[in-house]
Length: 60
Image (tube, rainbow, N blue to C red; front, side):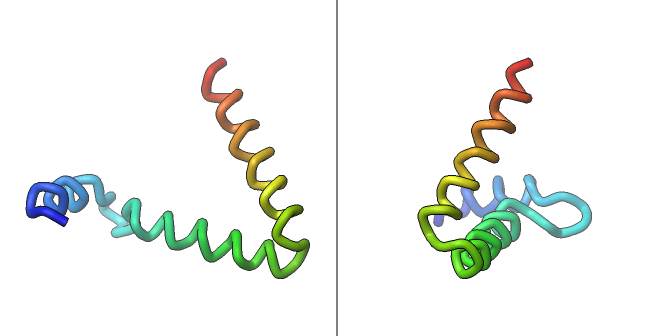
């Protein structure tokens, strides 16, 4: 990662300290937990439905 990328990432970090990296880690961790509960394919479909639903809400 270049110095510029690091600086940009630090500038995107909110005051509470939870930046994009933490959110990505949290999403991955939650997905793994969901896979353990309902299986990979079901978890994959559920996440796809959530993403598509949120994308539709943002367009309106």
